[in-house]
Image (tube, rainbow, N blue to C red; front, side, top):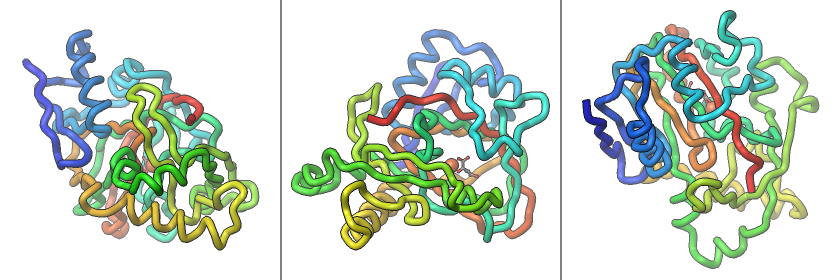
Length: 267
Ligand SMILES: O=C(O)CCC(=O)C(=O)O
Ligand SMILES: [Fe+2]
């Protein structure tokens, strides 16, 4: 089988055919996958039906699996590094908002990988390209943002888990981060609930700027929207994309197994 990569939009995402992720991946295949991953930021593999053990094995090729703190309740018994996402009430879910995974931690994960088990009608996931979000700003705005630091707090996740907001973990990271492997700059932001402000600025100064950057990042021409099928595996680069889980499926069943990989301190 030869591996074939096809872009899914002009901005972000590619689908990969000609590989079975439950079988050993050769060094040559991995190099092709790595190159595609760094270029397209999101990789889609259809018809994989990947069980937890092979999902973990494939994930380990890319890095070290981590168990995110506030999600430990969702661990799969036998595989604590695999979290199972299941249908939760729309009012509660933290993921129906554009976000990076865990920017409220000192070392956010670099990769997230989902393996679709049960898919309703709907329940799409969207990704934005945060390199392009940065590159499409004017040079003057780009310069203004250099050196700014953003204060993230896991407010939505805390609500979902029933933890008091004041106890939600928080962290400060650069607003413009440089990808450690590609050297490209990306906008590091998130939904207003989770992004408290910019260090040294008043709320009145930072809020309109952060709101503009959020809107700017998530324009339709910067987004790939994935319509899930059972068996899909999707992995994304959590250093240069935000994502948004659309909750339009009421209480229909939706189950995805998720692995995240240890990242680097954003710089
Ligand atoms: O449910 C989804 O489609 C994505 C959920 C999410 O935000 C994540 O797994 O990080
Ligand atoms: Fe997420």
